[in-house]
Length: 183
Image (tube, rainbow, N blue to C red; front, side, top):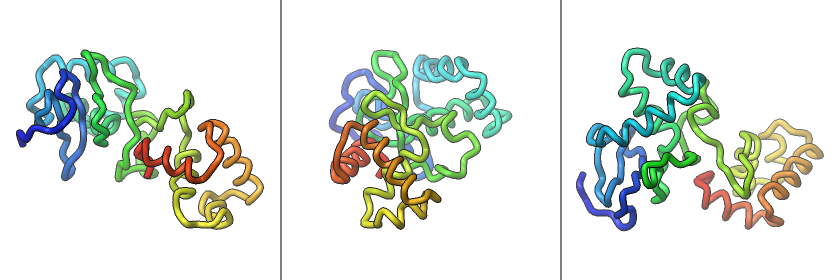
């Protein structure tokens, strides 16, 4: 694929998955992960080496291939497309939340991937689930049941989440959820 895409015509790098393969947008071009220059691979490798927990998790996925571990890291940390560079001016960004098919079933969830960072706070798994469910037509009672929370605890969790996000309405919650790839 070598189609020009709008945006990202600078030197930033955007990783994304397409049909279960990691792709990259660099200088407006869509490339395969294997077509990346050494310097870009090195940025990912340096980030992996900062955390023993990350290294162990990646080794669990791919015990025999360093290149597959680096690719898995990019998939987990940056697999969604948001048209914002994941590497900007040679600096790796924080990571992005995306609709990974393994959410909820991955033993390394929260290690390799990043939960959303909104309004100066990193969300937790319950916050994300609450946002997903609240953006539906489900009632508070149904959402509380799906979260395995008593209704009073659900309302308290919702109140704390709204405060953390700096919002007041379900509509604002839905907009934030959309803007941060949660729904």
